[in-house]
Image (tube, rainbow, N blue to C red):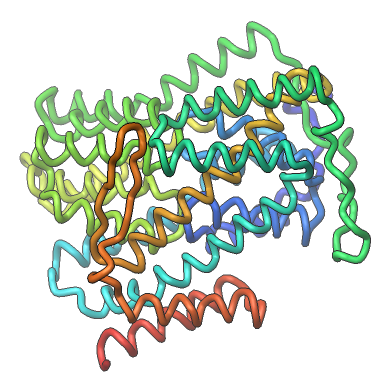
Amino acid sequence: MTEDAARHVVPLGEATRTWFGISLQTFGGPAGQIAVMQRTLVDERRWIGERRFLHALSYCMMLPGPEAQQLAIYIGWLLNGWAGGLVAGVLFVLPGVVSLLALSWVYVAHGDTALVSALFLGLAPAVLAVVVQAVLRLARRALGHRALVTIAVAAFVALAVFGLPFPVVVVGAAAAGWGLSRWRPGTLVVAPRHADDGSAPPLIPDDALHRARPSWSRNVLIVVSGVVVWMAPVAGAYLLFGGESVFVDQGLFFAGTALVTFGGAYAVLAFVAQRAVEVYGWLAGGEMVRGLALAESTPGPLIMVVQFVAFLGAYRNPGDLDPWVAGVVGSLLTVWVIFAPSFLFIFLGAPYVERLRGNVALSGALTGITAAVVGVIANLAVYFALHTLFVETTRWTAGPVQLLVPVWSTLSWQSGAIALVAAVMVFGLRWPVLRTLAACALLGVGVGLFA
């Protein structure tokens, strides 16, 4: 099956509607986003099998950038080729771009955002419940043996207790998976799920999914065209506004950031905050925290916080433009250079990963990474819980141990109460994500404005 001659496995219109529906539910960081895709594509639509989904996820976890968006591009490509990958990747971030652009405008224009703060008071605890549900679902699917559970726990401890860099954890998990495939291959065989758990095999067999034949000409075409498309807006900003403009600074800085965001947004936000606050002066340190709260409460990848940073930086350094126009230009330019490389990475690498699906050593390494992903997302869930339920946290160190611990006196009883209500909705009543978020948002408004 050739690349563009391949038929659409599912109608492109139906796929587009499905990806748009997914994009409206991508709250809660990568854990929630991956869970939404797994529930929709694997469990409900049954367009792709669970093993194929986890195989793609493992590859995306090795790449810099937002892994959930990359997973959407990968699966969109499997289902509908180039067009499917583009549709899935663009729609995945579009609601977040629009939402955060609007909230950035509200923040700059009004300053007093009591209503918005009240909404966030309800949304953040609700997202916490969704993330915990995602961790449990992924663990049930990915950890089919005690050895894989051990890898997941080790990844969690390495990140949460010892503060090891994410790339080190990924390499260690890949090595462990490779070792198991070589000396204990039975540990990597995932036991079939029970027939009474509501699961069913995919409607589309693996052989029907999209594939492409890798070649040097194809690779050169993708790399050259991808880099040109990626950096074209920065070049345009240089020609229009000069090399000293804030737009060129933001374009080059965030383009570089896109290449070092291993381990998700949290791994790189400290670097972004230090440079944006202390070097470029685009915003104050406290505003970086507020931007993070906005990004955590809107759909899309958490790295979207850089859009808020760019809006404020361009608004305050507009040059010859109207400040509001400058804010929008800086915001959209930054979104482009952050997310465009994801398409390049997937279109370039996915065909190789697909051809090597039967390779025992690679499959073992990717299985090890998938197990580690459970620990990584669990670590993000803990991080999110600490920053949702407590106003302040501190870092406790003792030798190699680096624990993020709460300041117990800053416990937010409002957030804790709403988190409990959200847990009942998600785990007890089994409400869908959007209904839970809407109910908790209204509860947050009631508590924040009237309590």
